[in-house]
Length: 390
Image 1: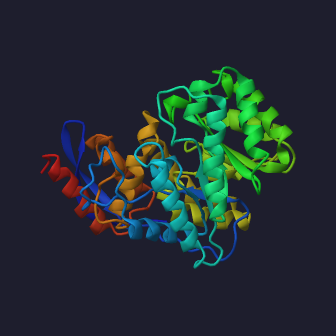
Image 2: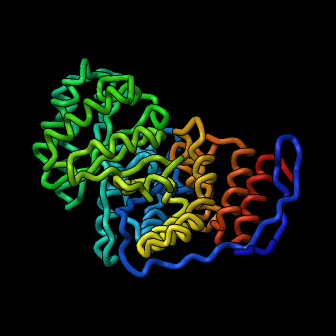
């Protein structure tokens, strides 16, 4: 589809400014029915810029704007993975606010036909940077799982910084997961987040080598298969994900968390495919929804035409240091008018440099994802001006 240039914007590239031709946005259709892949968008939270709370110390959330964004994601056919790392969980968003967020999302979902929510349970109310007894870590997991289940929520069992810091061997991981899984009311999604997303999780499962860690994890999954819906891995390595996907117990889902190679992994191969639990779906929901609708029709050409342009955008947003990807996610929501400001919990709007934002703008335009180019250009100019670029 040819897209006409409708605006020109001066954007920095290195130490110079260049005229960038902004094109008309692509048009995407809302899904007519369910997808053939389970797809959860890990959703961000919208900060409250008028709060008197100090942003580095306390999370101030604009609840209505935050819930409105979830309605946006549901409208495109996605489930919402709530209170995950995309929502700055453990990176500005504490457990008490996370539980309130989960409660509000579950209540909101009741009013949206077909809306689903899976909510993160972890141990992040334990102090970071300290070692804890395995029994205390177990109690922390149980506390959060119980709180979510009392609200009627489904659980994503998040990786634990406390466990990574305190476990002495893979046996400690097995002990924790087996006890927690033995108590949950319905099958959960296990969440294995790599060190590139959170350095505190390096060496998870008691092994620094990912393949050795995979063996430990698969053993836990196999022995608790009835309590596990699937596993989300975020290692940014498609070969490792495919290898693990082929070794999963029968009927267990692989939820890709690979924001670099998601298009290929979701499409799959002759031996299977990955479902999705992705932060990038927060950003590219219209294009990803269109692509998944094409996949329902087995229209592989349409699938790739819709999704391929979003991959460079995703790789840029999730570029190292990957843990700062949330800044790009919120920046896109601001450009597209889903929130009235570019302020983040923890002040993390400052986590990326101006050249990063300029390239993100270009890639979003290339993917046809600037829904209102005039608004996006106006806001990009505001950001440039604040940074002294006229």
